Each structure stands twice: as structure tokens, then as C-alpha cells.
Length: 171
Image 1 (cartoon, rainbow, N blue to C red):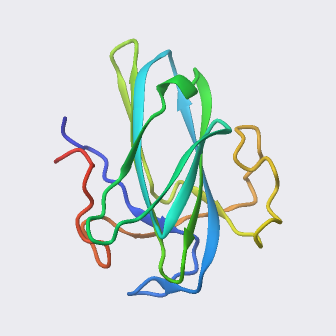
Image 2 (cartoon, one colour):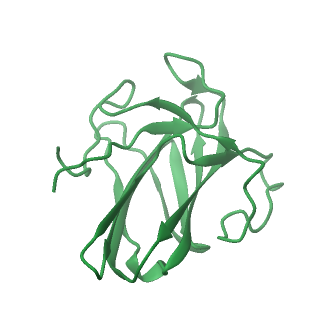
């Protein structure tokens, strides 16, 4: 299928241009997605520099690290975690020091034949705390993220320092 919406590399709005490099830290990211009808199936791909942990509606799905030799999204089947109505994708991403970025692409197939696409972009909310000081429920759908800031868009792949990202639908 043709990709009509391009995911963008994002981060907490603190990164210097053009190298996007900062000291070691982690940041939290959230995106609420409204699903208007029953879900048939859904998947998402994610990659972060240097790594990530992923939750969908408060369920921990996994974690991963970037491979700078061959940057690719890690794929998760998420359909069984989604419900009709509000859903929350939550990510803790970190950098070991150096470049920092998060990239997400997801597709939700509805039983009525429609398809929803969600991507990392400026609509994502992001927060920062010292490690261990974050609210315990920030990855839950009912958490109020209205005080969080909007994510900073770094650019659309392929772009430096990551280049091409494998595992995304082809144009």
C-alpha cells in the first residue's frame, strides 16, 4: 500500500541543529488515537536512538535498541490491545549520549474496511523527569498529559544521522 503519511523523527524540544546530539537522558512520549469502530488488526513499527520501551493502553509490549549499521523499525502487532474509542501509545525513549530521536509508523485496519495511519509528528506530547521521578501512570490512557509539550520535529527519513529506515511501507 502507498504510504500517504510520512513518519517524522521527533524528540523533546531540546536538541541542537544539525547533529541533534545531547548528553545521556530519557524522555517520555504519548499519542492518543481515536478508533471509531471495531479493530480488525493493527501493527506499528518503532525505532529510537539509542533505545525505547513501548506501551499500548498501559500494556508493556517490549523494548529495543537502534542498530546504527542498519536502521530499521521494530514491528509489533497491537490489534489485541486496541479498543473502540480512545487509545494511547506511550514510549520511553533514551539516548546514551549523542544523537536522539524517535520514529513511529502504525496502521489500524477496521472491521468496516477503513484504515487509520498514525505516525510520529508534532502532535505527539513529550515530558521529561529525572529517572525514577516520573508519575507511575504516565503510560495509561487516563493520564492527563495537557501540561506536556509538543514534540520537536527533526525531519523526515531518509535524513542524517540515521539515513534510510527499513521496515516502513514503501512509497
